[in-house]
Image (cartoon, rainbow, N blue to C red; front, side, top):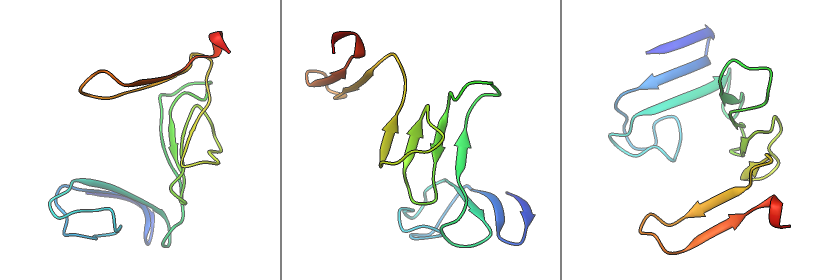
Amino acid sequence: MSIQQATNEGLWFRPDNSAGASNPLVQAGDKSIIFSAGSVETGNLVIAPWSASSYGVRITNTGNVGIGTTGPGYPLHVVGSNGIRVERSSGGDKLNIDPSTA
């Protein structure tokens, strides 16, 4: 399924892919959402609620991912007031960045 505004500009929802289809990260059998502003490495994708705030996720055409920011400048750029927590799925190791303890 695709949603296109013009040739090669839009979103493509692909339920099954061959390896490397549209992006080197895609593995055979992956489901994918591919986006483009008309040519390779263009456009940005935002996943967010309808809101006056900057809640949501932004993926830029360079691969940076932003949470709570409109201009992610790093591979993972998080802006917020509640801190960040990274935790191993098996438990144990945790990384907490808590602004209240800074």
